[in-house]
Image (cartoon, rainbow, N blue to C red; front, side):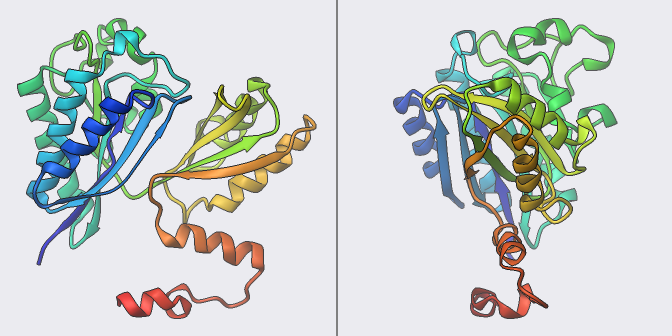
Length: 299
């Protein structure tokens, strides 16, 4: 029985094609691992990779990608719309088949230790791997970003889980952890006013009193001159995509703004999208397990 683990590392580079292609080559070079998807965004200046593999392969791929990023991404020169604190910003491990969150937690700690031991990059453990409750939420961990992290690391409660209280001079600091699958879901607005997206994001996210399983920020897409509500849906069953979408639509109307589109970054579980189809089509008594053809073919 082969365990299948997913890893979705986020890199602080979405513009330099040579570096992005280098990351792709590294991801494809490790045995026992498959690169399922990668996407890059110039405005965010960020790339998201989705890999799956066995227990040993996924650990090696994650480390080699962090190593390549540390050698080719200089955070002192990085600018982008998405919050970030390291060349490899975050490395989550996710159980997919015959594996558990507990096993992914152990994997995350092994990889975190190796990154620090061999690359001298400090590590925060986050989500289900978090060493303290205030480190579970990535937004809290990343607050201050690369520029503010040297000062943050001197605060009593923010010593790295691995490494000294100083960032790598060019690669910054990385968050490593384990979590269940999330959906990176963005909604675009027909306005160039970023303050509107920020106000809506605050209403949406859990920390602002919004939906329990939603994280959100306002982002400006400079290449399209539009504002975006950028979200991580950490439990798409607890907070479905259509619920945040409709709330954004309703709140945007307050400012005379409309939704012009949405996007999924990286891969998503099929059920997250099918739940939306069921909602908008008002399908009665729908049974996802029994009425989806692919479920029978793959079962």
